Image (cartoon, rainbow, N blue to C red; front, side):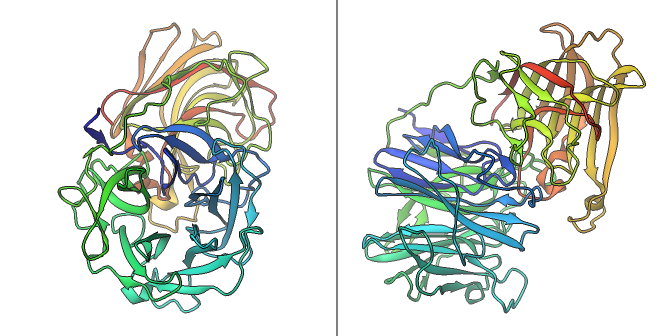
Length: 540
């Protein structure tokens, strides 16, 4: 039996985790913002090894992302189970981070799907919505709100409202159960309610989702009563640690109790490298809890922190089926970890037109265009040291391009493609960066600057090419070849901080994948990818 596990339990961009248990099975869901399919659902038997079994938002008509900028879209979900039904409650953010916030519920009998169409909760504002099924049969909603009287930056709070369990709509009046001003909290959010030993426990996060993030706990004898403050708050935070610490920005948590009576917390955190940069986004971590004599929980690690190595839960190890780092597109559907940007209402890819290949069309949209669905499919960069590659067949027409893209957002990315310009076939690597953000203008401003990193003609190109990228923490290295096993260096020591959330802003992490574009022109062309691989080359 394993004695220790290594954090994070979900590497790469898996933020805002929520968890529930059904018997001996555990289910977890995380945020996806504008990536589609959205809200990935994971299953585990031991809390350590997880299998991606489906996505709650997987049909194009479930959610309209057309009004959502890159770090808007689907924010923090909560997953719960009651009487044979799984529920995910979530917030769709549009037209600004504090503008339109639609809270909705999807349901399923099987967590692998299919999930229902969203049921919008009328009158539910704010973010970080959560559900609590009480043992008396009543259903409660709690969420974050921004009050009419904002006393200081980040002044927010938590409200409670009963719901009709049949219609999933509010009944009765809402009640503020925690005003952030009472604890001088900033960005009071991420509420969850639990019941233990006759008390209702309210767990929240505050301080913002970056370096000052923390987890706070409160309790009350009644669900809508006065909540007592845990005198040891915050019960978890790394805000007092240097930014060079291996795990920082910890917060946004959820709790689960095992069938053996152990309590565990899932939460997000980041693993930075030099200059507090992190390309992987916010990841999912796991820590044990114990309940103290004062009736409040304590993080049960030797230092009270989220450590890299932690003793395993008292559960038998359970391993999901092995996952190959390479995909050869032999199935009718992509594996559930493939994502595009915004819902795919138009057909820009196919696995059937040429069996054994992923065909990507050269649409007119560019990756740097605002609020579009570019012809991009990718997977999360899950490791600081990693490799990715593909074997591509492509005959470009003038100004068309296809190859690999490394994406932090529509404003910050690398594009490594074959293109045709003035009749010449070129291999090119360029970066796009929002120069407005770089000079500290408003992040809503867009001044996309293209910079060529490397360009060369391919006189020997015969429509086939191997493209590879190697990541080494804060640098990326680009290779190509014309035969299998041939690795010709194209660009070395390319600045990895371009893909850091710290530099780009927002709430997501890096994706690596395949991309094609006709750069604003109408095109009937396509690129065929015979395989794609994405794998670690070192430690997590």
